[in-house]
Length: 62
Image: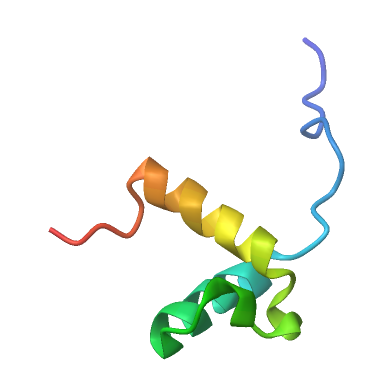
């Protein structure tokens, strides 16, 4: 009966596309996480997304 509202919480600071591009750059180049270019956002954020996806089993090849 109630209208469906938006998810609670604040809006994301960076787009998923920027973070995923940072992950792809790091995997392609093989550089340390700290060397991720700033246009892909802070390396800590990119690494955090990578770890969450890795622990969830995303990206595993069988």
